Figure 1 (tube, rainbow, N blue to C red):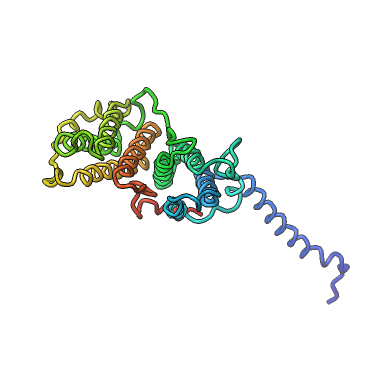
Figure 2 (cartoon, rainbow, N blue to C red; figure 1 turned 45 degrees about the horizontal axis):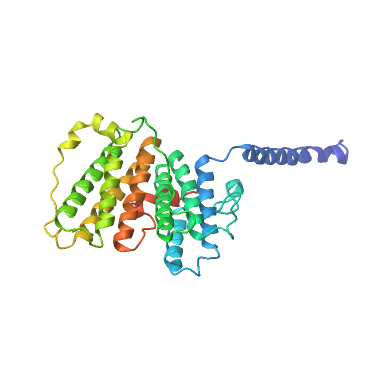
Length: 313
């Protein structure tokens, strides 16, 4: 039987089908392009971009400590997961220095300090616990390194705690950090009394560490923890028997205990607790750096802790 339709009319249905498919594809692309990028992915892309800029800093190779700093930056880049793509990458800053301070004119310590401040702000707001922990640890590490290098900026203030004991103060992670700080204070006090005579090489760092612990335990969020769980004061601590023979190891172990608890609080706490944890993480890292000469690239972060950030798309 002959088809009475003209050739043009016979071709119309396939053309309409193709048009519908194209319109659906364009509509899907438009909807995807209009969808906002998750803030956590923007923060991760920002951290990635800043790390790459630091790795390209012109003074990195010239510094005596340059190889160690490069190794730390490489470890931090790996912890941040795969390179960001798509719109998140375009939203990241072009360099680590920020407005008014191009990366090729700012010294490495200043670039590290600026990067640490930016990552600390993102760590306070991150929704993903693993990302908050990694961003906070990287910020604390870079702040410690900036302080060790000196330069124009010195160690930055990562955050400013509020006056309110506030949200997050009663979480188990905050209680664990309070206990770690209390144990560290007890250990450092014992070291000062038994094993660190005035004028000894470790005397200055230990004195500063004791003052830091007292300051952290006097913070509003710490007072909120204790008010919620007064039983924490009943903790009984036993010092290692060889603490007098190796005070540096005892102090480093106490600092490591604080770092681990602080990294956990970064993941589980609210902004008030995270700020307190950031301060504890940086100060414990500074003590370990002054006693042992090395800065941990990811203080307090275990390999399993960064699994979510490493799987980021």
